[in-house]
Length: 451
Image (cartoon, rainbow, N blue to C red):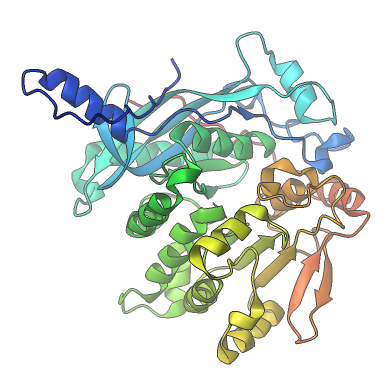
């Protein structure tokens, strides 16, 4: 049965009657649980690299990788009204880190694998099926002071992660951090899309921080993102210490940057006594991709300076016409990193950004509607709604390919900073990249067991 978050109960001007404690509890629960009134998530458009049929991401998926069920791992610092067996998570931040498996299904019971494969490997105009959360399978709940060695449930979760990695074509783990105005259901569905279009070859973990699911409560989301920085940093530490992942990648979307950027800075500046090289080797952070990052530009640059030497590559994809970030800019009275105003930067920050773009593994990707055919001018959700951008993102996470190898073209600003744009023949370049990088066998299978 899908997880359904009830709408908040309307407020009442009258004091609650002490004779009705059950009604009071129910009203309180409804008031703090995330509203479930968002539009459904539909299967995103097929990335351009798979549209011609020359590249089939599912060719070597194997039996475990075929089907309409797409389970993904999850971690959340949402508070819980009910922990088990069917958890109900709230919009309130918690000190606990809750871990488990989200069972996601693409389409209804009538959608068969061959139809889903056709929709996923062509530009078929048929209506895209809904991606829905069937259930959450909670496995562990860790307070901030608890050691994994003292928690059999946490040990079981990390053992499950390792089994999933062992069944994948590689041993890399992708952590997806959603944006504002998000729900448990939506973040799980978006994470499942990443896993599905990788040909089920990437093991994906969704970090579900407590977004309210409403644009009207954006400032609450901002506060909750700040409260999620430490839990995210702790999650990365736990994954690095307790799994066999060869590398950890991160995709931060929109306000997810307000969780990831300071979280990485926290990890990079913690007084561990390690050398920078040793810290980088321990954390194993490979690619960090910020899609339309909703975070103060100056803060983002300053935090990037703190962690760029312990991460393999940092990518920022930005549409300078992004309407959502225009709204955020008005709210915060400062430009956002996904729609930056370079004049806000201090001279030393500008110098750092030029150096980072030239030799420190920082890639600024200009998602320009004039370059990308069919991209809505004010698009904010381009990483999954546009076939060119999603293909470029998969080239990074699946193949660990730099921007030039992925087919992007280098440009240089008058001040000397390098950035990347999409050329007119990007679709053909993406196909050539994937054909020359035939995937290894392996399913990226997610063991079905939880608790």
